[in-house]
Length: 211
Image (tube, rainbow, N blue to C red):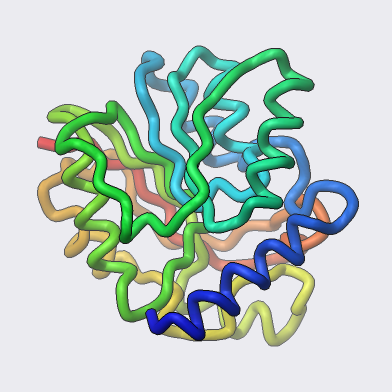
């Protein structure tokens, strides 16, 4: 990612999260919620956590949460939401690529609509895999490559316009090849998440356990 693109990308999210209300609502993503509840709490890293709806939910359920996002506005919204729910979490503002957590320092990573730039998404997935302990988890939901046609039919469903920022099952298998696949599917869903995720879309869902 070049510096000019990176700055514009950050500004875009600061603008979105600076709006009144919560861009994707205050409730957690349904798949993340259902998946997380199947496991005992531990430490979880939440990259691209935005305004914190998923990180705060994890904290409510007893997880030790480290959220990460490029947006200062997202951090402010997250801390406010955490306060409303009487929980605490750590929130780091920065680029994941520039951070250096210790190897095998988290019990789980939650990747919910974490659409990184095409040039570095696989690199970041592999970086994240290194931060997960043995037997630790990845919980992932994001738009599939088929989603572009859904967005063209109904822009309100949201998602990137760049095909290379979208995902396939094959990419997930390659990026997390050291993981036991507990679930991997491409499926059509109906989203109703705040202002920017509304309508029918196509997603990849993945739950993996590190071998």
